[in-house]
Length: 273
Image (cartoon, rainbow, N blue to C red; front, top):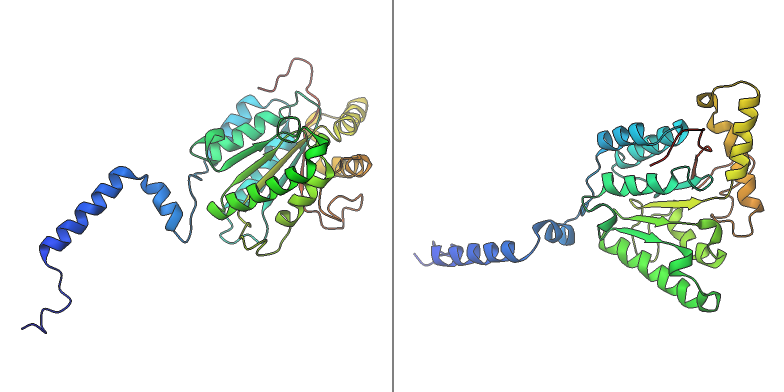
């Protein structure tokens, strides 16, 4: 009889175990618990593409390229169960064209907590890296922050504002995380999203738009192929240019690491929220 009952759990022990689980559920956030122990952790990553497209259509005036490129890149990336590299979006254009607005929308429609999500990280050179004399410490801290947060959750969003003011040394820290390797510093980072916001290329983008207007072409007829070369050249000419070696080039036949997203100068009477 003893052998027959070996391995069976008394009801009292089972009920006690259930009580402990219930107590844990009441104390802990089960989503966080799953995120911490789950093999396929998505954390609070809950993309709502329908909401994003609707909001962009209603509130981002005059930016047909930005709307199409952002949604297309995001859908392709998120729907890929095993991406080979992180999604890196590089937003270019003058101030007031909607770049920051789009970045906030992405956080809102990709993560349950929006910009307040613990997996959305926003950096500004002026605020976070203000002193050139502290650059070595900044580089160490930035590497540790990115690596640590990607270890905690591979579905993380990193927003870098005012990239034209970022010290090139800090971009060197980010380069290993942006390529197509499987693991960097022991961290799987291929599901991360990096977004860089810059005024670089804004003047050149506006010049292309002006030439189109002079040729009596509709604004919506401007294509990405017309803007990519001038953005790449502007990045090469900028002393604070960013990107991995070979990412920015005037030759479109060469592989780029970033997806350029141009923002046209706002037409008279139009507003970007």
